[in-house]
Length: 111
Ligand code: SF4
Ligand code: SF4
Image 1 (cartoon, rainbow, N blue to C red):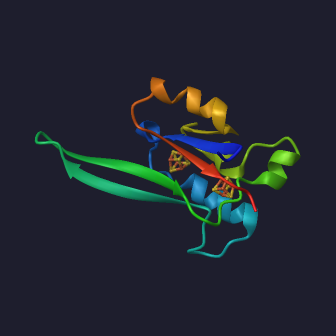
Image 2 (image 1 turned 180 degrees about the vertical axis):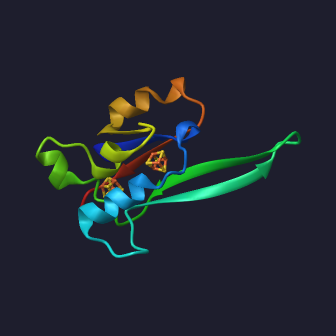
């Protein structure tokens, strides 16, 4: 199991895309290259049309380990507008999964 991970509670993701921008600025990535992408999913509940936003880490994500080594949070976590992202030890993040309804836990092996 990867030592570090990223937990995203997408129930609270507003689709603001600040995480994408923060990642691009941190890594000087050009437009279209991201460590995180936010996708939009529209579906019919039978009563209304709902839209969920789903952020996911790409293979370019290094969990901002140089920042973390300096005691900083990953750029995307710091700039998330709804504070729905959490970085930490995978084993600690996994313990909180049961308390949430729409949550994903990504594990990354930094290169
Ligand atoms: S942890 Fe760092 S590299 Fe990964 S998506 Fe967030 S900002 Fe990008
Ligand atoms: S910054 Fe946070 S709220 Fe905004 S799109 Fe990314 S995960 Fe969602």
